[in-house]
Length: 121
Length: 393
Image 1: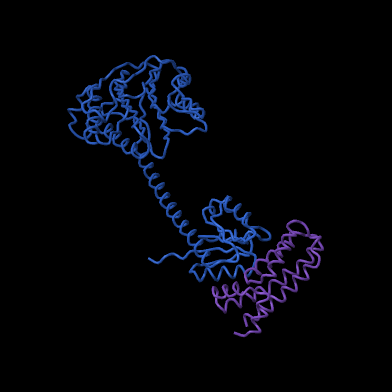
Image 2: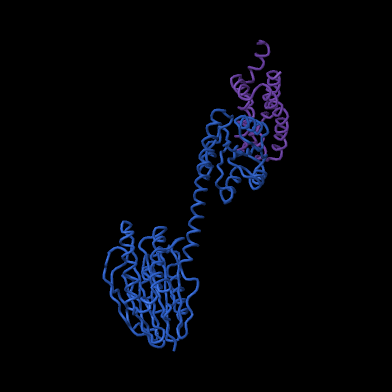
């Protein structure tokens, strides 16, 4: 075990969830899953800003929902919590209160992505 | 025997979820196809047979509710079990889907043990239902064969005889019937007409219907097979007594344990002089009509047949004159019920008999139309059988 990697990953990824998934699907396949997530999530996150500008709560909600779902799968707890909050705000038509949450979400995703890459390396 | 591999359809717009389910289910030995949205799912479902669908709720274009609703309204797809794939925040949606006909739900992120257990349970139920359906279809097919064979026990066409008109109407309440009718001419030129109603319903009644009908037909025309001289010398009365006594004793003695009986009206008409000899074994009174008015009611002259060995029957004789019409029917006509549980009764039928000009076919058509309209949306619970014979002018 390498202490440095563990520390970085542990702050954004719930290892119990990640290791459980890894055990279920195997080390090779989890890398493929992470690859798919890192490829798909930026597209989803990129939909948030235009949807907010267009006041399209439905597109906003669905994109947040998908990010939330995958974040939960990999144990990206903070990302999951924030994506969930965004989904709820869209559902309740409170897009006006979003503030800087999209930027925070982008940041959280970057950190989760980095940690997941490390864990798969 | 190699077990058939189940074919599962995963429907999810989220690539990671799709990959995860595909991988897990393939590892569990299933054959899996994935659809990226609801519309594609329905296309796949119509193209190939699937054993189970794992359906995401949140999808663009066509969501899980719409796919589920379309499947449940489609006779081809409604039997395929659907497991909804939901996030922890969607329990209420999952409940709504189960109310709509979904089999179960699976929370995301997937727990492999739960995934295996729920899919296993759903597939097991599906296989049982499939077996049940196969069994039901084979039963239906058997009943259909039974129905076709039984129809062969009714005359394919009625005798055409100079100076007389004959018509019949028959409508069974179920696939197979306990009622029967028959009309045939004897070698001596006389006409025999029979109507019968075996107690009970369904296959049991149908089997006994074939027995009663065959015995009556065979004993009526036995002179075509053997002992020709003896049979030819029988008077109409002796012949009718021979037919009914033989049939009654045969069923009562050979099949007494079954406790099956039949009401029967059998008439033998001398087509030359119009003499009608008959035995009514517990059947509805047959009606003799002149100018559309009942002039005689041919009530029972003996008990039902098939239960009392050596029961006594008597033969009565009346004369049918020009334009007289004989109407014989089973209790399915007066006893027919409408949606308000009111019975059709004899009175209603008597108003439909027409005048002296009405042909037997017209009289039966009138009764049929009125009766079917009367029954309406109510379930026909008993077989309906009518036979009409008219002496022409």
